[in-house]
Image (cartoon, rainbow, N blue to C red; front, side, top):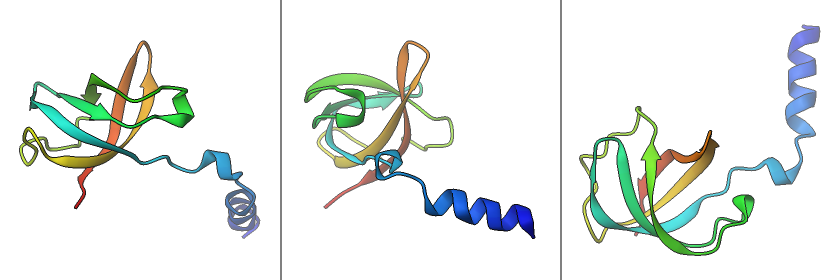
Length: 92
């Protein structure tokens, strides 16, 4: 019971800066081999301005449903020297 209360307390006091940042983008090259090239908005949490660049994609994300021109949003984290997408979804 104490562990559950401690976990709830930790989650309740998590700072806002730790919230997941969703970034808007558009697919500019057909996805292939666990990689996708996006033209993306600024990624504030990483101090990056808007640009077009390739991203590695987590192995749990199926890229088959994405094509050039699709509007998407994604979350990303640093993985060594690379940026890796954790979540990728279509947006209207």
